[in-house]
Image (cartoon, rainbow, N blue to C red; front, side):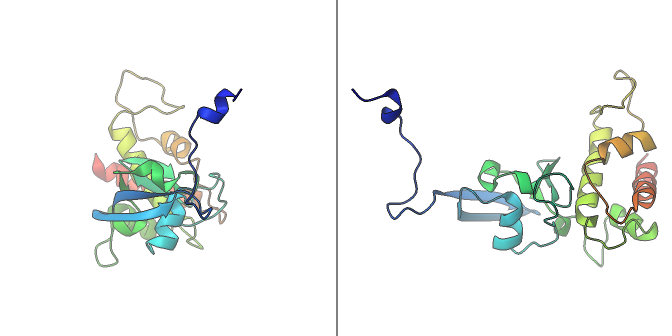
Length: 189
């Protein structure tokens, strides 16, 4: 008598033993992209290896450093922890979509003005995360340090530090990063 498990169809690769592949369509930095990819490819590897957008960095590859942070549908995501096939139809913004050398985003300009970087390895993830942080605060999304859930959330140093805590800077430019984000938040008010 066959077990119940033998009757459940399993996803398998091609007849030759190749891993399963799927067609994926994304909007990346405002441009449509489609391709057939291995289901095991992370969003970070798709962006860097397949598409050539190398601004997002592979730091720890475990979701602990934030160097790979991108914005997906307005929310920050550690691209190293997310399979690309999970983002079918999503809008992805990488650091390449934030600004250009001749037209810096206000956060990029503030990072330059405040020396919010040293080696620069974490900077793309820091800037993408900071953009999402400011949008979260403006939308009234509370954090663990938000004191009053009834009142508008103030863009305080405490709020920024808490929300940016998933982005590590091994050079220790935290005070400058905080100053850059605070300047942009103040200008947005």
